[in-house]
Length: 424
Image 1: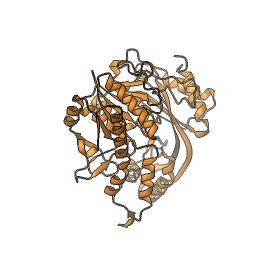
Image 2: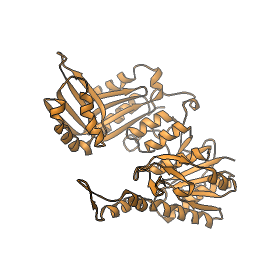
Image 3: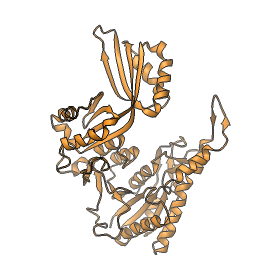
Image 4: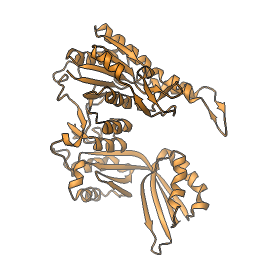
């Protein structure tokens, strides 16, 4: 017998038929003798609908802007998960499985005061552990907790994954199974490269890089939490037959295990290729080279919640000026340029140049720590395809290159083949 947390995303609970399939997945684990908690998202599209309703409501005039009460926003958008948890509990009860729904505040999952994007402070898992040990399935509404003001607080988009991992840590679960519309983590996007392979195991660090660099299988915060709390996490498909052979295999179920490095016997040099489209490049020409300039450039962007990446600096021959190049999401480009233009007098630069429609392609692998020539292989693959590299950044287990968006698919397929990922 083991203790399992099962999480089901929006596509997995998209309608009543899908909810009944989810109930069969849960019943399979209960019948195997496991203690089970389930975390659910809102039904597919429901959160967007609820957010749309809020945005259509009249706003309150404030200091220089109009706004709505974030606490009421949370009360509204959290209702999607509450509906799903109740429906799944009813479906399980109809299958003679003892189950009850729990809202975030009932556990209680305590958060900070940042309504709309709250972070988890603590979870008391004792009540869930007690009910689970009695054979009752706890069906928990994901994405939500209770803030210090006693009001519902939501965790931001993708927060149900984070809820599931946090609850798994709190109840000391043996595993957290994230059920989604894909059957695991692949070497790259199968829609671009049909030869992409499902990976049986991936380290926390590799998954964190993949998630932050464009792979949308898991939410970044949930991977961070799983890594810090040591929560073994399986990515599985909710669209497979719940009663198919092997689905109930606790040790080796179908899917991908996200785990510590020491659980992977033989580490590949490169594990996968990720990509993120809609990147934009900004270059500041002949920036004054003096202390505090970088803070003057990137501070206002940070204050505006604009994510900056791939920073490259080139000092002029006389050492008096530098060119500063970096990337931001394409959707933030216009805002970023406006902010930088406003700082021109303070920062001191000759010109600002920008371009949207770029893609960041990344090579990821924990084996890169102990192997040479990984970067050279990537650069040769791009050269062979006549793909120009605009910028490069590296870390211990990652190489990211910035290219024109038109070459995204060619670059991904070329790198996938260059590292032999289609042959292993």
